[in-house]
Length: 130
Image 1 (cartoon, rainbow, N blue to C red):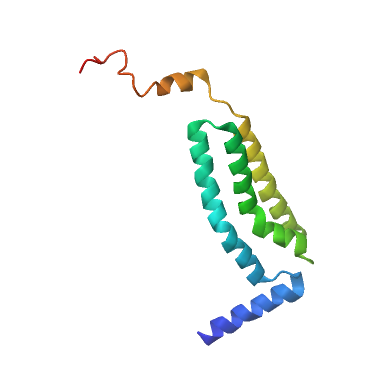
Image 2 (image 1 turned 180 degrees about the horizontal axis):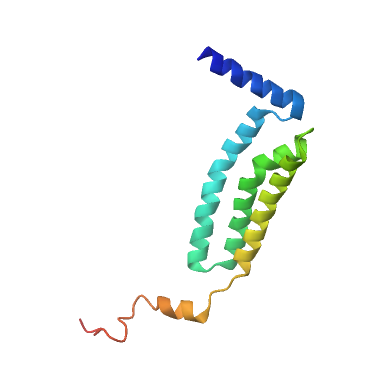
């Protein structure tokens, strides 16, 4: 067990020395963003269900920020990282922004709206008198 802990400590020190990234700070940012991640996901789903466009945009943006926060720390404060690390971070953030924009631009079609029907309707083939 002592060997594993000393190895983890050595890796953390190497990350600080070589790349300027403190793994503890990354972990703290990550753990702080978790409640925002889940709460914004919940609120985004609720807003989508109620078709509240402004709330969907707001909570989707919060969701994106909570997802990207720890990686933005590495992107801005990391140094001497290989080019592909920057590429992966930029691709992940770019993919998140692209997905968010695409999701917000999609509008429900008339057929999808009609297929849901009104919850109070008994339907054309059912007798509503009980």
